[in-house]
Image 1 (cartoon, rainbow, N blue to C red):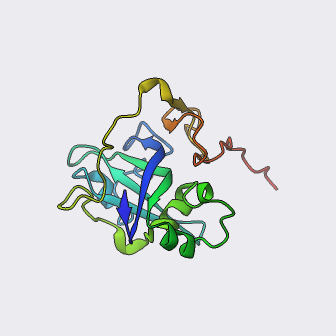
Image 2: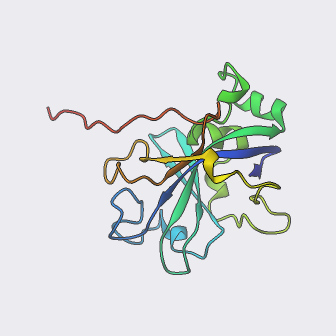
Length: 176
């Protein structure tokens, strides 16, 4: 993925289905102004603000009218390292620059203005790697930080890659 003068090799993603069947999806309860782009067409960026301080970016993947997207969770900065470092001065190592969806957006300079951007245009901002990652080098497991459907194994990552975010199972806060 390329944005804001930085290119990353994606190392971790997480899939979300549309309305009804996936309570972890932002489109679970239907179309809203926030999630409108998730209903297609595919190839566009769905950017949202979370916890009042971070942006996250998804790639819309479904057919037009059907909500689904893939959250870009982590990556390795392969071009534009000085720019990424300037955006993420707290990162202790280069592997930490884009480890996690908010850090990835920060390193790439992605904010709300990126919402709806077509990622497959000319030139493409998102493209397949020159060489595919062998299936045996890809792990799958439960999604991170979601309250509903957290055990659905729709998180995919490059096994053993230092840029992959740490797994944290969702734990509900006790009622007061």
